[in-house]
Image (cartoon, rainbow, N blue to C red; front, side, top):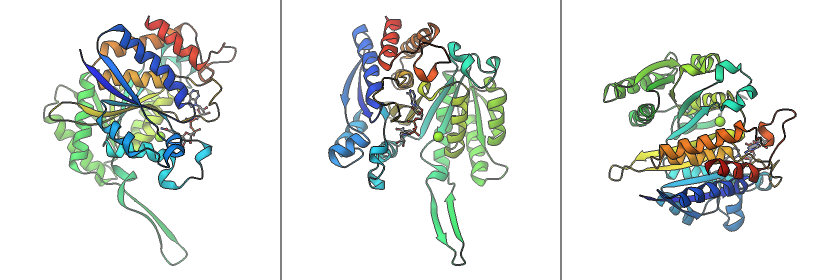
Length: 366
Ligand code: NAI
Ligand code: MG
């Protein structure tokens, strides 16, 4: 039986409120026996800036690097709108992603049966949906150089961003996709735009070569990213794992997420490379949503995205798939009973608070 070290970074706004509910879940698993979790807590975002003028301190950064997983709430808010750019709250999250080299961003799109009516799509299209978008997170057009606005001197300016991918970057995200597919339905769809982008041609080649190199048990399909967007909305259940670059992944994962419901329901994981010696990966788990300053302090925050993010830690960092399934089932059961925070309530539904939803999930675990 193993002990896992977690660094909790609640952050700002509703971050601390939803983190309180995750702590109950962690305590529940500790009391149950089996693997245990030791937690340490740090500051990130605006709260860290207020305390020491940095969006994350070097000390907390070192703790994050040494942890088995970081459980991150959300950062930011109007209070810090005017702080200098490189110490703004989001800089804390960006530093974590960069220093931990979290190149693989996992965004599941799962339809909870009780919420199938809340989607903008027909129920039969999304009922039972369970797909995973894998977005490359540390390369591509968001980071490529040159990246600049130049003055052309004739009253015109030129904005330039550069899409750059090297073989190793594509290979490691492709491997992650095949390995994830092996634990799921065994299918990977790779999306790029090889018809108009050189980086897309290379992406396609490297994914194909990686597939031939030990992953031929997985079904591999290639799709142009724009067609992929159409297919996601037309018939999302055709997919299992979708792997794509940083830019397409940003958009496609938002589209996929919204197939099934509210921001307050959406977890995510960001993983680094596997350590050759220990087999461990650096990892950060966080809800997709932000710090929701508009509802902070009102008890209206939905803690499910945060709790389901811890569920992803159980699955992807600690190989506790049975426990992750149990937690997902507890969430589904609470929803089946009609329990709703405000964000997922339809007209006329009675709503419960953040704390009540957390307690309901604990009751289902019991
Ligand atoms: P947001 O995700 O915080 O909120 C968007 C809307 O969704 C709001 O109406 C909010 O009340 C609602 N919402 C979000 N999470 C919810 C939850 N768990 N339960 C119920 N309702 C929820 O995005 P917004 O308003 O654009 O940004 C607010 C702040 O958060 C900004 O400072 C932004 O920079 C930051 N942010 C931080 C992120 C992070 O820490 N990873 C990600 C996105 C935004
Ligand atoms: Mg996005």
